[in-house]
Amino acid sequence: MKSSINVIILAAGLGTRMKSKRAKVLHRAGGFTLIEHVVRTSSGITPPENITVAVGHQAEQVRAVLANSGVRFVEQSEQKGTGHAVMMCGAALAPQDGLVVVLYGDCPLLSLATLKELVERQAAGEAAATLITTRLADPTGYGRLIFGERGELESIVEQKAANPRQLEIDLINSGIYCFRADLLWKHVTKIQPDNPAHEYYLTDMVEILNRAGHRVEALEVANSEELLGINTRVELAAVDKLFRERKARELMLAGVTIEKPETVTIDSGVTIGMDSVVEPFAQILGRTGIGEDCRIGACSIVANSTLADRVQVAPFTSIADSVVEADVHIGPFARLRNGNRVAKGAHIGNFVELKNTQFGAGAKANHLAYLGDAEVGDKVNIGAGAITCNFDGAQKHRTRIGKDAFIGSNSTLVAPIEIGDGSYVGAGSVITDPVPPEALALGRGRQVVKEGWAKNRARKRALDPPTS
Ligand code: UD1
Ligand code: CA
Image (tube, rainbow, N blue to C red; front, side, top):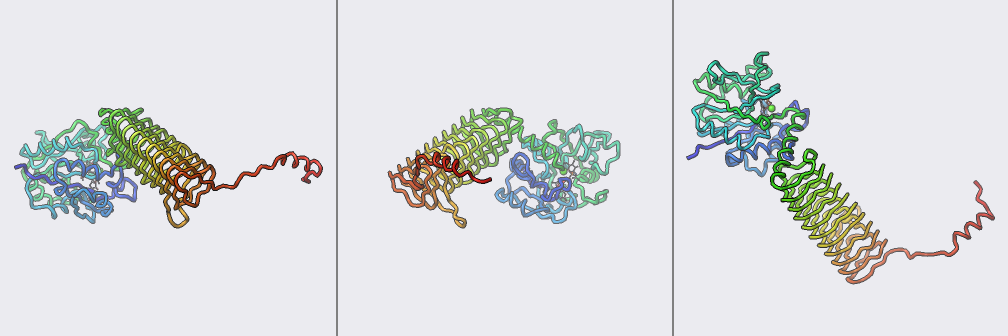
């Protein structure tokens, strides 16, 4: 039987160096909070009930973002260091056999492949623990690995406690460990806060295990990028950039054209179908799914939306929380706010805003319109400047426009209102009463023409000039 794997993720710290009111693990990179990335990777090696997250700062918010993940939580109300956090988890987890993987919540780029390699190396060998290390051109801030004469890992010295010679060492502690569970729980309580920061350092476990006659192995990983820890917003931006590059590359290799990929922002959870094109500076965010042969225009933003095949989004368009069926054209400069469904083959043109609206198949609103809380039938034509007055100052009301209706330019549809199938609304009308099917509705002042009016006015002025 495969021995059990428990994962502990440390996420209780505030992250002072972030200079933020928000706990560090709640900051985002690649579209997810840092803690979500780490939980997602951990889920690749063990079921969620074997994952324990140590929470402290903003524990409620951290629990909330992980609410659907199925992981367990342990409260570390006072953050006395990484060793202390593991001890708190020990009280909830020990005794147990198998392996315990410890990860830090601020190291979100770690790949599943590397994590698996760590666990396999530990399971196959005789060591009490294995940790991941890498060489960094600039190791500032990280714990450094100290090796003995025979090449055995002796200890980890933190930046703050290191002497100048130790600061030269470029092999760093990534903060990713795999322990034999029995030895971790037997020895972890021996950690003392005997360092300049008066913290319980988990890194002391290396020395403690050595002293108890055990060995700790270091697994060196060549790709140091995935081990980057985030302590400041500068590092957050660097990691975010790496996530974006990873995502763009993954999509391009799967058949998506991305123009100037260094300019686009695509969240990790986005899917895009083959032969779709993403133009420069587009942002595709959250849980967005895009079909095949689509085009996302330059500087457009698509968030938490579903676009079927062959949808064309022209530049500078914003789409959020909406569903768009196949062959729809949207934009440029269009805005789909929340809760819209745009049916097959519809056209939404420039400066058109939709909110909570069902827009029928083949229907068109090509310029300057607002459709809120509306149901627009198939093949309806909405003229330029037509708007639904859906809000009476206190409540929202619905507008229903039947199929094949024609809404003239600059019409004002005062909701609640119903426009029948196949009817016409004359341009410039204010519509307050229902329009039956096949009817023509006019709601505007009749035009008056006064023949010769301007000429008469000029003559009067010549006889009696206005005093200035
Ligand atoms: C830590 C390591 C360092 C390593 C680096 C890798 C220690 C003592 N040092 O330093 O050797 O090179 O990570 O990125 O472990 N946390 C808690 N409770 C606490 C303290 C921290 O849950 O009491 C959590 C934090 O929320 C954070 C993680 O542990 O997610 C790491 O803490 P941090 O303060 O960032 O450690 P580093 O100084 O980066
Ligand atoms: Ca850190």
